[in-house]
Length: 206
Image 1 (cartoon, rainbow, N blue to C red):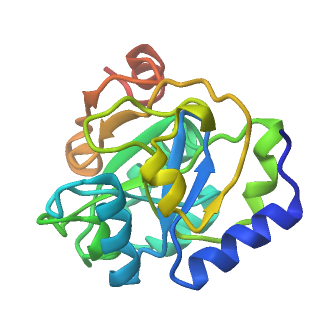
Image 2 (cartoon, helix red, strand yellow):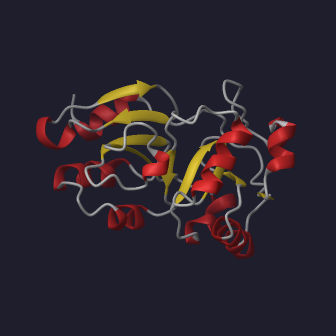
């Protein structure tokens, strides 16, 4: 299944209307909603059965849009993001202005950022301006969905929009902590995933 421009516009309309969408990324299928709409965020969490105090991530389909939304990021951190993204990473960043607080849970000073590297079949999503609050499209604690056939029926029935991008790689994003990178050059992997530690070390230093 190849997504087209009309699918991207449909996703934008769904998010703008306060809906919850299932969409394909570079790793697994995700759930998305407006990160500034409290009712939409609450509904996404209810669909997943996700604890309200567990953070989500904010996703942009283009790195330049992400950097424009976070102008306070330091030059060293920005350079690291440009070296690593787009890609199968969720990057934890310092968030001194508490941006996208609904995605941050009890730690508004930390923001999780996703900028996926989209395969040609789903590249039409690059035009979605975002941002989106994003979490994997599975019930909390259950396996990630590589295909729509693996989607939990409750999520399928509860979502306002489902975009079919065909089978996905199936390995979730690596969670990379860059909160100490700007000042100390420190970084750590909090969850292994789609991007290997050796790739990170080559870009960031050991």
